[in-house]
Length: 116
Length: 113
Image (cartoon, rainbow over all chains, first blue to last red; front, side, top):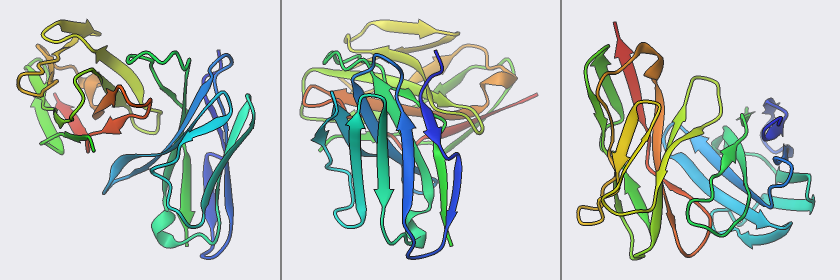
């Protein structure tokens, strides 16, 4: 099993540009999560999908951030008009989506976004 | 909302000595699960331990933790730290309302020779 795949691993954008991050979940997993990791804030939840449907986007900044899951094999996180404060590692995770409390989330290696 | 607190941002311990990483939480939910994730340098976080049973010890790879709802804690312990244990450790809470994890701020463990 290849694990969760995230591309690109590193991305540098200029302020005001758009950034699109890709995630391929583990085959057979029906839940996909996006988190953001910074030194100051640690790991913060952004949004998640179950069976491709958006379930909870309570952590998403309301402006400029959007996420989609057009099919079961990939999800994207798009940041429009990037700002320096968007610089972070964006982590994608997937799980079986079994609704059990101990349903384990498996993380990808992350995309390190740097906004200059 | 839920909150998870890891009181130490940095912990340094000498190889062979015991180590304890603290994790406490606040939640209004009675049915919860807890996870410890470990993240090695430039790698993805990976699950180390998980539990949803009150007062039951859970062990994996030499680490152990017990969920104590009475004190709202899920501390991580190891009796003899190894150099390879140096990493960033997160504890995380999952309540019954949804699948998202609420993470603590993380504790960076350094094991020195």
